[in-house]
Amino acid sequence: MTAEIEFFEPGAQWRALLFGPVFCTVGIVAEIFLGGPVHWVGWLVAAVLLTAVVGWQVYAGRTHLRVELTPHYLRQGEETLALEEIAELLPPEGTDRWGPGDWQMARALGELHGVPRRRTGVGLRLQSGSIVQAWARDHDTLRATLQRLLVAS
Image (tube, rainbow, N blue to C red; front, side, top):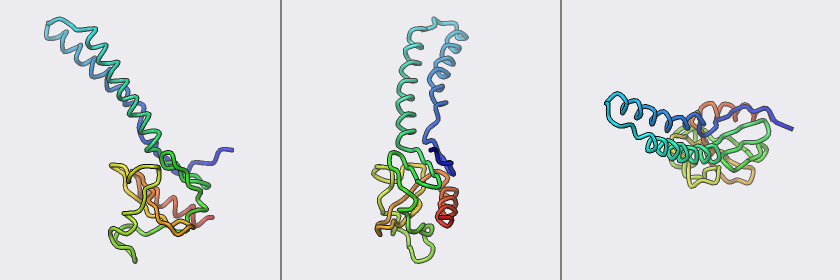
């Protein structure tokens, strides 16, 4: 049974694999126009190595930075949290009774040491009473979708 995905961020895009071959093609074209020898083997090795390194990074990003929200669960990286475990969506930083630094110091979901770079945390109080941070690049949409799903349940 597949749940309908309400919010999704892949973490990384496979199109980044094109950077190595494109960069190397530009280098080959530059060598051709400059009239010097073209280092075909060197450029081929560079393209393969760049593609391999970027592929590893994309795979890691898609594994550890993926965000998926359905009516039943919130998946952050490799951690999945059932929505019925969420008691409350905490207000954004600096509003209501929560001052800066309160929920922002809580554990980030996803088995990471903290909220990943270029992502913003969203505070959650769990049924157990503990506080955690969900996170996303588009944190406003994640917050709005979480709010809608939590009210509906």
